[in-house]
Image (cartoon, rainbow, N blue to C red; front, side, top):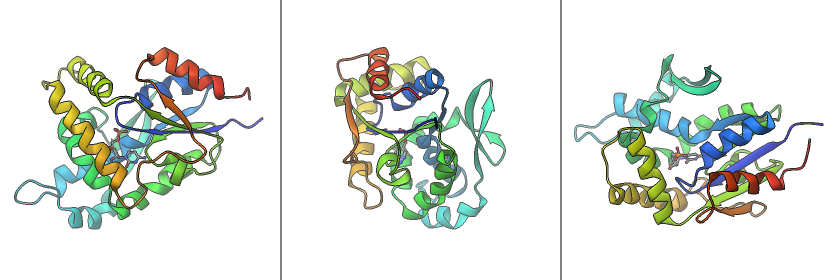
Length: 224
Ligand code: C5P
């Protein structure tokens, strides 16, 4: 039988990407982290479309979209993001990108630009895609939809530990502010806001760990 298409949406730092990655390995699916695409555009903007006050020039970014070629390439068995031929997989996690990504992602032109890349990947099935609007907009016909959430404090704690491990100097309050601000912009934007699809299964992992979350999600997926 055909391999399933799985959509995983939810709030920042609920573990969507790392959990999707493991589920993809377990089930033999391709994993696509769609947040990486929005981060890739933001990274491009920070380098090429900046106002005098160092903020992003959205109009310039929109007119530069045709110059942007974002591709996932296999590096040691893992898909990493390349911008116009350069590996930017590490750079897109920098706090400067996290701080600027949501205002970029709320632009309709940016979202449309990335829509085809996302849908093309899912066409043949056998994919797990994580993001904010996968179950609602990108893949409304997905076989399985999950919506992940956890308390703000728990999410801030997780992201802080992750950044600390990566050698980033930051503090938990700054991390929490960034999460809250992104969630607010993502949920309140006009185009494709972050919200649970009517037919999505809610997964709250405030009090369960990564392994338990994976087990819970897998328990919903039928053998194929
Ligand atoms: O998943 P991640 O935290 O890397 O996503 C970064 C940002 O990209 C989100 O805060 C959101 O603004 C945007 N995004 C989006 N739609 C998606 C995935 C990410 O708007 N499908």
